[in-house]
Amino acid sequence: MTHLLVLPILIPLGTAIVLLLLRANPMGRRIVIGISGLSILVADIVLLTSIYQKGIHSYQVGGWSAPFGIVMVGDLLSGIMLVLASVISLSALSYSFGYLKKEAQQALFHPLFFFMWAGTNGAFLTGDIFNLFVMFEVMLMSIYALLVMLGEKKQIEAGFKLISMGLFTSALFLAAAGGIYAFAGTLNMADLALKIKPHVDHPLVSAIAMMFIGVFGLKAAMMPFHFWLPDVHSAAPTPISAMLSGILIKVGVYAIIRVFCLIFVDLQGYFQGFILTMACITMFVGALGAVAQTDIKRLLAYSSVSQIGYILMGVGFFTVGGMSAALFYIISHGVIKSSLFLAAGILKKMRGSTEMSDHGDMINTSPAFTTIFFIGVISLGGIPPSGGFFMKFQLIKAGLDGAFYIPVIVAFMVSLMTLFYLFRSWQKICLSGPPQGNPLARPSVKLLIPVGILAMLCLVLGLAASPVSGLTQAAAEQLFSPELYIRAVMGAM
Image (tube, rainbow, N blue to C red):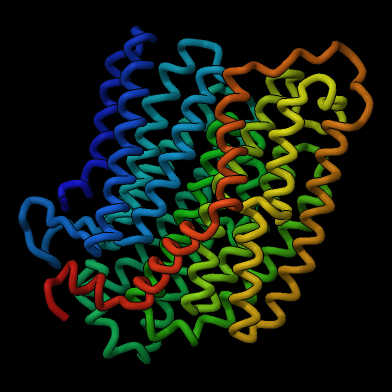
């Protein structure tokens, strides 16, 4: 079963290469995309089930034993992130066929998309710091190409910001990786956990840990590193906006969880105050930015910044309950925000604009869209019976249980701000009078179907919260038992 660990990387990588060879064959591309996408989803579900039943899996690439060779590792955290990435990716791929009308665009978009998917899955499965850097670079280059593929001026500008951020982050990442290698003589994360532990009080270790927070905070759009996200979101093709908010920025959060629950375990208390402070600032500033927006995609982008603050708050508690709540939040928010971004793309296709003032009367134009958008609004706003209610309820409960009263108060206040800007946007788009100019066309069914499926999942996560919570609880308990990960990779403590 350990061979399953390579499939989430090899399948999308191979698919991307095949799609490049089939650029002139639209039907062949669709068949390959459908088969490959479903194969990845099935492989991810089987892998997660196997990890849940049998424990952490590891795979020594080429037969080289750790820490000398490349190692792939799958624990419950990895499995959850892989399945979430598959669900969002399949929705975005399905949506792209109705969103990108030109065959030339689809022929370029889909290979790049699968390269991005391979990099994302690789980041979740790699067991060493250097390969995490490599997977980040694969993601960055793919996202950059996907962002500028349409050649519009605002996309080029956003692409420049993205690549500038990426180059700075890469340099900082290499400096941090070089520092930790010089100190410990290894980049294997399980081996680092063993070699760093006796020297946890060394100032260089704390400095490297802070550098990693900076690297991964930039990737996650944590304050004050959020500056690149709104422009990239608003300029990117809608399927990529959904991917960015739904899963890609969460790779940064995943990396923070990984290093602080494995390598820098004994520094959790030292950095707890800093992480919680940054989480609260991120929550508030993101929500404040969202309130000021008139463009629905920029509103959702700033909202993503705010919601990352909620997730970091759960991580920063460094308790099993807090981590479980953070993981449930990652799952729910990924589905919710992807559905909302894809809904915003429908508006873009209808009138060529995502300015809320250019839309209105959607309740009469498309009751289906109005319902789907409303489900996304109440879910992100945390209203029952949606998954959004349980993600916030569990987070606030974990905060109260740990006596983290100030972050809980901030989270509650930001929730009220979230409800305000979400319902205001829904009212403007769906309930206000019809817009001036050309009459609205009805949304394409091809676009409504993937958005509707994600909206239904928002409700399913609320109505069936118990099994998902059980899974995230098990994942959190596993994270706070790092010896299980080390034993799976190294064979002994």
